[in-house]
Length: 288
Image (cartoon, rainbow, N blue to C red; front, side):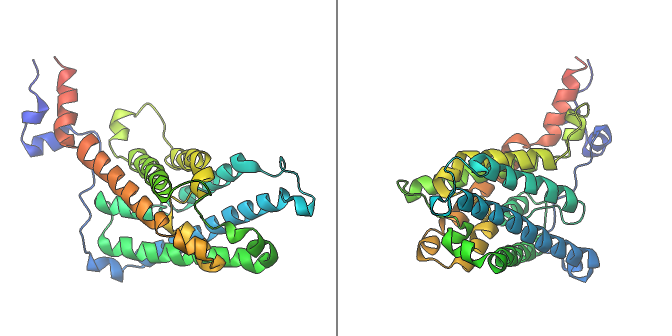
């Protein structure tokens, strides 16, 4: 019977690992502020969030325009909810793929917050990422409004607003669960252990992340218009500047941050709890 790896010394245990688990990010790393790569990552987050909002808000406004009966639109025309969900999910897939090697491809303060709690990024990086994402969102929606000001105001600027007939608690719950799905997918798709556990399955991380965004939009567009991204919700609210949008705005911050926190805790402290022991136990059982 082979010795159980969980009982081995840490140095010997590390030798048996067939994956590299990066050490937790420091809470504050002053050295980051002196590196060009850090500012390049901020620029990447800004531009990616700008493009994300530009494409998706244009899609939402275009859909409302195509289905507006006062403009000869057809209620069954346009891209529909399915098309809007594809626009959000597909755009995230493309932008995460493009920026993952530069900034990690967060494009979402809730994702950044979840990765902060999982000790994947420092507090300084997380805060400045969120600032870049919010500014990028405002800029992206600003471009939409500049190009289609008439349509933008008429069709509510693509702002997240709680749908009629739903309580604020329902909206908050939808945002919590939706963001949980997204952040849980992000953490799982980027988990270093996948290289050991699923080495036979090629995984392109942006793909499941994009699909998660797509599926959550299908489920929650009828309830909240789907936020799960505070920068997306805030950027649209700033340019639309409507009382209803501002009254509901807290839902699209509190919900995503709670969902991200639950996802980070679940992934790091339940699924990945004592990962060394779990990894060792699974290996030792193969030799029994």
